[in-house]
Length: 507
Figure 1 (cartoon, rainbow, N blue to C red):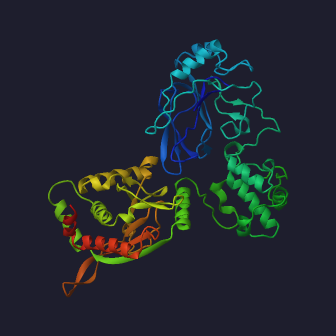
Figure 2: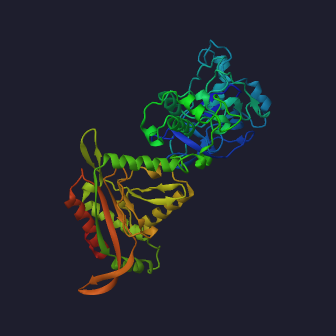
Figure 3: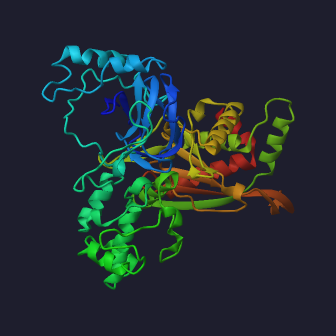
C-alpha cells in the first residue's frame, strides 16, 4: 500500500481493511505534517462499517503530506499520508537519495537498477504491516512506472481541487493548479456512476465535502431537486432509474436561492446542515448505522423468520446468581448465565446453531457456538461475538462479556470481534421493555430475546404469589427447522430459567 509520490518519499494508501470493507471515514488524525513517525506507528483513526480502528504506517520518517480531512470517507487504495523515509534529522540525506519516482518516462524500476536502488532500500525499511491483528502485506518488489505528465491531482484524496496539504519537504502547503478539464473531485466511483446513470453533469455541482469534494448526498440532493422541478415527489425520484436533464432542472430550481449562484456553480449544504432541506432532518446511513441497516434489510429480504415467546418465572435463577456471588469469588453476570443456558439448549437443538447455504441449497450445522450479543453504543447497535461459548464457564463468560462491552462503548472493537457469530442473545430488558420480536442477525438462524425481569403475580405451587417474571422470545429461520423444534428450544430455555438445576443434566 506504499507508492512513490510525486513530491518525494513514499505514499501510504488506505489498506484493505478485511471483512469485505471497501471504504472508511477519517475520524481523527494522530499525526501532523512535519511529525516524525516510527515504523508501525498509528497515523490515523478511521471508522469502518464494522468498527473503529487505528491504521499504522509501515514506514518511518517525516510526514510530508496527509490526505483527507476528518469526516471524509475514503475508498480502499486512496492516499493517506506521504512519508519521507530515512533519518528524521537528515533532510539533506533524504534529498541526496533523489526522488522516489522514476525520472525517465521510458525506464521502469526493474529496468534501471541504479536509479531504483535507493528507493528499494527505503521500501525495505518498512514493516509491511497495514492493520494491527490483520496480517501483513509485503512492500512491492517492483515500483510502478510513473509517467512524467501524470496529473498532479487525482480526485479522491486530500489533493482534490488542487490542494496538497503540506506536500514536499515541509515548506508549507503547495497549491497545484488543476486544469479546467481535469478530473472532478468525487468521493467514490459509486457517486460517479449514480450521476452518470441519471444524466447528471458533475461539473455543474459544487461539492459540500472538504475542499469542494462532491459527496453522494450532493448528487442525491440534485436529483431530488430535479424531480421536484418536474412535478414528481422525492419518493418517486428514489424509484426512478433516470432523470432527464437533471443538471439544468436543478440549476433552474435553485437559480434564485443565491445572488452568487449560477447554472454552473450551485452551492450545497453539507449533511451536517441538511435539516434545512425539504422533508425534515436527514441523517446519512453510513458507518456503523449504515452497516446495521444493510444487515437488517438483508435479513428481512432473505430469511423467512417466525417468532414464538413464553413467560418464565426467573425467581430461582436470580436466587442462584445471588448465592454464587455471595461465595466470595468473581461476580457472575446474568448474561453469562443466560449464555450457559443457550449453549445447553443448542446442544439439544443443533438445528438453531446453523446457517443456510443458498447457493448449494444446504443447511450447514455448526459445531462451535460463537455467541453474539447486542450492545448499544453512542455510534449505534453493534453485536460483539464471544468465541467458543460451549467451552467456557460462567466466570470466563462474565469476563469476556465485560471486555467486549467496554471495547464496544469505547469504539475499540476490531472487525474480528464483530464477525463469525453462530447464535445471538439480545437482552433488550435493559431498556425497560418486556418483549420484542428480534430480527435475525444474518446469516445466523436464530436469536433469543430476553425482556426485563420484574415482579408480577404468578401461580407458584398452586398459590398466587409475587415472582420475578421474564418474557423470552425466539425468532428463528423457518428454513432450518419447524415450530416444534423452535418451541422445544424455547421451552427448554424457560425450564432452565425456572429451575437452574436442570442445567446439571447437561454438565
